[in-house]
Length: 555
Image 1 (cartoon, rainbow, N blue to C red):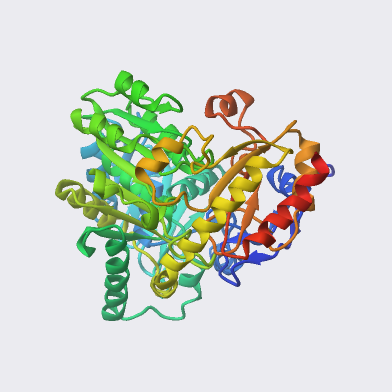
Image 2 (image 1 turned 120 degrees about the vertical axis):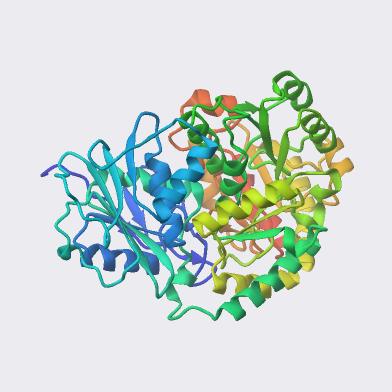
C-alpha cells in the first residue's frame, strides 16, 4: 500500500448553478488528469460525475449498512431491473422470488428465451429474494445472494443471511439504492451510466414528494408542450430521468430474438454506442452493424427482414453528419424495420421526424429543450400503437419517469425555447463561417457550410443547422490542442455538454473516447483532438473574438 496512488479530490466550478449539469475544465491538463484518474472532480455531467448531494445520500446508506459502495437509481424498480438485467447472462441458474423479481424475469425471458435457467434455491447459483419474506431451509454458502427490501425499517443486522447486494427503497424520496458488499459489482455503475437510470439531484433534495395530482398535472403540461413542438399529441409522449434512459427504453423495446439485427448510422453518442455494443451479444443477438459513410448504399447492403431497428441522430454527434432521412426511412420500412431518430441536436425547431414517418423520436431534454444547464431529463415520442404498448410495459416495470422538480424546471425553461433556437441558429452560422475561413483550422463539421458533404441534406431537411459545430486544427497535435484550448477566454465556457444558451467548448473525443484504441477512432472517423463547440446566445462578435484570440497564435 506504500506506493498506492489515491486520486486527489479537485473542486471544479459547476455550469448551471447548484443543479448544474456541466463543469469548467480551465486547461487541457485538467481534462487529462481527470481521464487518467489522477483527480476526482466534485461536479460534472451527472451520469459521469455523481452530484455532491447524491453522493452525500449514497454515503449515508453506505455507512448505515456498513457496505463497500452504494448506487442511487431513479426508482426502486429501476434499481431492481438494473441488477437482474446485469445477471441475466447465458448459463446462469437463478432463483427469482415472487413479485418484482419474477415479473422482471418473465419480461426478459419472453423477449430473450433460454438465456438463463429459472431454478429453485437449492440448485440456483444466484438467488434474488425478498428479505422480509424469504425463509431459507438450506445452507446458502457459495451462492450469490441479492436481497430486495421495500421496508425502510429492516436493518441488515436483523438478517442472518450474507448478502452480496441489497436493493432498498427509500420511500421518502422514492429512489432505489443498490448496496454492495463486493466491489466486483461496480460494473453496475457503468451500466447505470449507459442506461441513464440516475437519480436527479433535484429528486434527492426534495424533502417530500409532490401530490399525485400536482405531478400528473405538471407532466401533462410538459407533454403537451413537447408534443406540440414535435407535431403530435401528449398521449404519444413519455418522460424519462435522462436522455439515455429514453434511448435505452427505445433500443431495449426493439431488441428482439425474433429480429436479431440492429443498425447504427453515423457518429453516435458514446453511451448509445456502448449499449449497442454490450446488450445484443449478451442476448445472443447479432453484433450491431455501424455504418459511417455511404449510408444509403451500405444500408441497402446490410438491412434485411431480420433487422429490428436502425438508429441515427439528426445531425450526429460529434461529426454533425446528416443522412438522407427520407430515403433511409423508406429503405427501413420496406423491410419492416423501425426507425429511431435522436432529434436532440437539430431540435423540433429545425426538424420534425414525424413528417417523414419516423417510428420513435428521442431527446435529451437536458440540452436545447431546456437550454439552461440546470435540468436532467429525456423524452420519447412514438405514434406507433404497438411500440407505445411495449414502451408502457417497460416503463411501468422499471418505473421510469422524470423527477417532478425537473418537470417543473423544464416547463419553465421550454417557454423560451423557440427564441433561444432562433438566436443559436443565427450565431452558429456566423461562427461556423468564421472557423471555416480561419487559417489555423483544417476541417469544420457543420452542415450549413457550402463545402460540407451534408449541405445538400441540410437544404432538404433542416430549417437551420442548430448550435453544434466540430472542428479540427491544422497539424492536430496535443501541443497545439493545449495551446488553443488553454487560450480560450470568456464568454466561452470550457466544459462538456451541449444545447445551452451559454457557449460550451470541449475536446469531445478526448473526453468521450479517451481510452479507445486508435483503430476504433479511425473506424469512427474521429480526430483525437477534435474540438466541439455548442454555440450559445451571447453576442456573436464576442464568441468569435474569443476563438480568434486562441486560434491566431496557431497560424
